[in-house]
Image 1 (cartoon, rainbow, N blue to C red):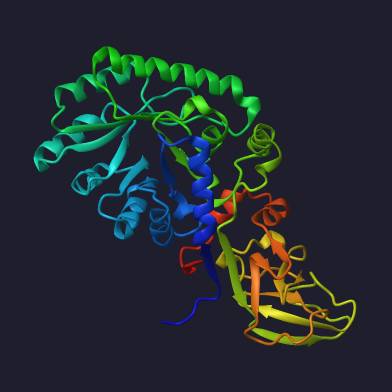
Image 2 (cartoon, rainbow, N blue to C red):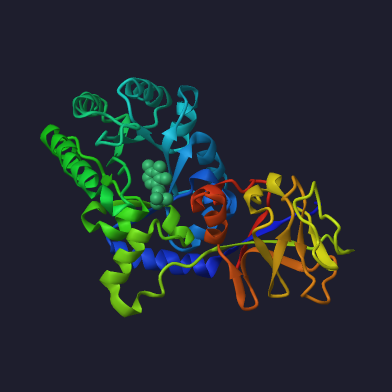
Length: 385
Ligand SMILES: *Cc1c(COP(=O)(O)O)cnc(C)c1O
């Protein structure tokens, strides 16, 4: 197999530290479902799922049947996969056959599911999603009532795995009035289940932010996305952690991810010459530059033209000129002895320096998750210690 122009390394030890940290936070009785939608926030589903399983994770949440299929290919036989978003009617038989859990977020879906389960002779594993204020997907109380009636009537074809909802903005504490309202409304849905004597195996509401800062919302399972990858969901949540944990709170979450490439070529540029397309960068002195074999089509943001830097031999090498589709150039005049093939760190640590995802996102207006999830699937991911 030929080489790709960059590579992503995932630290098993950092992931283990994060999962342990989260377990301690949410408590022993609470199951952690790792949210691996968007190609595991750019980390790569097929590499990431087995790494998380090594840390004891046995439940994964995805956004689509397409992602579920990818996770299914690499996971252990008794690991559970849950689709929170799109599952097309045509794919319901596939989901039921493979024991995939999925959300039911409108009434029309349930009869279809029951039919499929009947035909296959395999119970469908469903989660009923409550509409509590996000106005995204989910059942109103009245619709929930209808669904519970059907679930009760066809209980041999339905495994009622979960009752769930999603907070609309728990990472920003200014949204608290809204979050509390959702939380309260969710109690009504649970009360309805009790009244009808149709009980879910578990309740789950919390994503990273609520799991970390809203203890009451943890119930039997939390759906943790961004935090497992080592990112605090927001300054609010981080501040909450610092104030509730005092001094020994520094060892919190660790980044799992590094992104690397290597120098493609090294060349001299004379004072006054331009580097790359147009006139974006003019050499103010004689310079040595390194050419790197990736660009915006490989997920490196074009917004970093003339502003970002990479690490070479542990030193910062500033970007000179525009990020091209498949190339960009950096200034290495101050870094002697660089040859083609030299390792370049795009995100991560090298020597005493490091570049975080945040240093990208501040200049490009991307949010961390957005930047990460845009990294092409074609970049190879590899687990390291
Ligand atoms: C993305 C998502 C999560 C995880 O969110 P994070 O903030 O990354 O932890 C949880 N639940 C649902 C329904 C989601 O769409």
